[in-house]
Image (cartoon, rainbow, N blue to C red; front, top):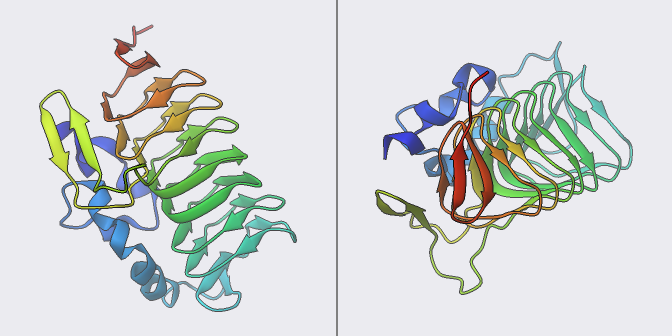
Length: 223
């Protein structure tokens, strides 16, 4: 299952949370650790670059946070990030440098790497989005199965038991998710893959692919 590992999916130099992945094979293993990691990391952030706003909320002085946005701790908003009108950050959230959290977007228990964009009406919960990943308008992560059973990741090589009830999506670097898409619990999308609009995604989608619909995934053709 090498293709689903942290090393294959993410450029760790593109997140302030690099250390949380130390000694971890699969990225979802860090989901239960995000809150405590933020509390410890926040206390070490330089005061000349970050200001503490309320309990366990650190916001870079270069970040732009609209007055109508709500941020509950623990949370870190990175340098030059933008948190737009009516964004709802519920806690346990790291927003990377240059990332965009859009109007009415909701985040919960997430790591957004640098330059991630979730700019329009997105819900991202119990998920990790890699460098420059982008979710189109109205696309969401579904993080709990309808039967409330533990999430299993389905791959061609076999299933992976996660032992987790809440698990949204792991998006690799530069993944593009089309508008109106639902990423079902346990979705893992390899780097540089494109997901067609209005898709319902589940299981593992390989890197450098185009996901057209369930059962129709094609390899990208180089220039």
